[in-house]
Image 1 (spheres, rainbow, N blue to C red):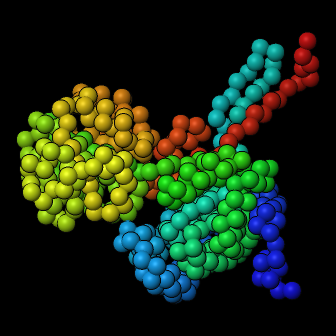
Image 2 (tube, helix red, strand yellow):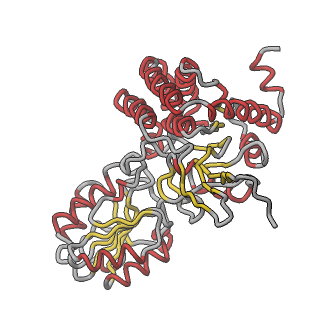
Image 3 (cartoon, rainbow, N blue to C red):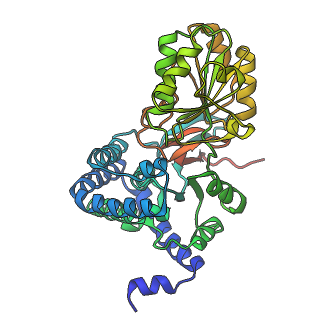
Length: 425
């Protein structure tokens, strides 16, 4: 029986169990490797991605063609698409992760107890991490790099729309790892698109230590509902930008256009624009967005500014468009803006544009989102832009890690206790 036939003969549960057991063994070897060796293996993986660019881009063209036939949206196709520039950026991202400080072994704190015991907490890898994702083939390299650098093994399950791209990227990546002495099974791609394999990952307690979903709302909700393994996740990226009454009109226009239209298909793209009733150039701001081809869905006050504005429905304020579509509302002031955000934000990224530092500090302290910004585009909500290298995702919960999750977010800690013969009385 061939290896492929043997894989197909396994039940999803047995397939995931076999992969996880081999990943656990590889992770123990990986965690024991010197930091410099793990970094060197990642630099080799980055080089192999470029050396295999033709195979990767050809595989991506197959996925794009299939996606067009399936009627994927422009936003989904943009997420899926690789070209030479994007592949170079993926490779550079892997190399950048190699150059980041290694959190493994970092001493978080130390203390000396009155009885003479010396205590310390140090960072250690989480173990084997399952990443379930859709569309973006760059996640294959980003997630693998972050896991390897932090001493974790990775089980990757990409979406069917990027199946050929993911396989080509992983093949090149693993070749580099193996050249650097890292076991190839430290990073594995689930070889089937059977949805039952996702269920098997979610219930692999004791084999997989954490699940990270990256994808649409339905995927994340399923993962959170079905998982028997700890989950690090975010739901929608319903990001707001509030244009305060004291905002500079030129800055407000530039940031709104960038936050919405630079790339509409990323989770940091603005989905709702709130304009203060006393902002002096609301009509110019609305017109600039419309002139750039953005569809605006607004309340009555916004509709009155330009007859191209479509009436907003109740659902629009809770919609992640991932397209050149934007909900726009007029608010009565800072408190009204924060109340709207509290009702409708997904706690991903929310921003204020203002020259009033007091208003900005009030917004920054009171808006409870993973990322809160002042006078900056929400499109900066990215691990690379935060100096973290690649990110495994942006977590919007409150436990373990929040915001862009990079190396530190993929570690836990353990206590080390050093004594001189102390026995507890």
